[in-house]
Image (cartoon, rainbow, N blue to C red; front, side, top):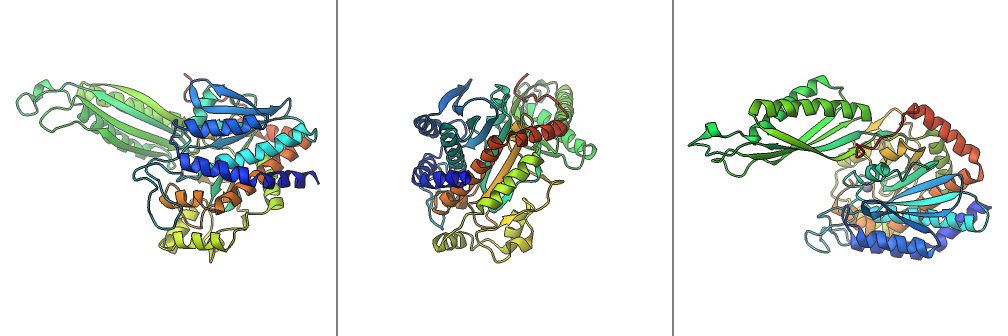
Length: 460
Ligand SMILES: [Zn+2]
């Protein structure tokens, strides 16, 4: 059957994919610095006959495309690393380079799995077995939650019929929950400096404004829906106590289950900032650092992805993988492991006695909202979207840690990559073979969004 040809094609690329993944792991470039990583991916796609195009104002973003016409299916790749998470491929903590960055979210695997999927689909289009357009979206700066909203602001997803992505994870599952929409905003207050003892009456304190703003924001908490998350830190509180601070800055994040709620709370926060400025006779400016939508998982696509996940099966790990996974998580108490897994609604009985999950979870989480944000939420408001988790990490290991960097470079990673690539490619195969599935997903998308037109937080 043709799907077996697809899977075999992905398996035959194993060495090339492992090389890409290892190289990205070594580069470990942080948000917007992914110069070598994006070049490597672009070169690989170009060599496979893809057309490469740039994204305006985003040097480390790109689009690789092959084929033509309907349906247009995009797979979203990410390749940024995290600062300070450099780590050798071993089970005890030791950085490759002190203070350097590392792939503590395993985006080297994420990027590579997407390569595996699109290249296999490309071969099928080239041989006339499939019709349509396949795209790899090279999306930078996911860790700052800005890459895709900015790309979306440039309109690069507008003509997509379907979008898919995956993440190396602690378990195998088609995602059936939503995530929070968010805004990240810096407020800079400007006042007047003066000697704090000799002439405080001449000063107007920017720090006072920040503190009063925070008081106001803390009172606001009582009058927003329960699921709103409001967090801040003071990023500049002045320099010395004996000078009235002329400059102060506070960095806020506003999160809520829906984008509209985030916008509403943000507007109220703006009023609080205005009030604080008025009270202190200071002025302020605000800068939106990121603004993301919540994630809509398209049920039709999720079903199709799940069918493909069951056809492919989870990755199979060997003795070496299990002993690495066991050693690197040996100090994590079971209760912490359960907590980590519960953020994805995995139940304690589903992880009992497990080190690396090879089985598939089909939990009914449709009414749940994960208390975090994904920047592909924006894409899920532009085209039908579905999202896949494939095991690359031990049970109970939290993201953004040195342990993840180690696992992302270890041998179990490529098994996750191949599995993720097959499930996504199989899904694209089904969609291109039967465009009725695309139509159905688009109808559901219209119902989900109510036909509302997407607007990027970065587009004024
Ligand atoms: Zn990630």
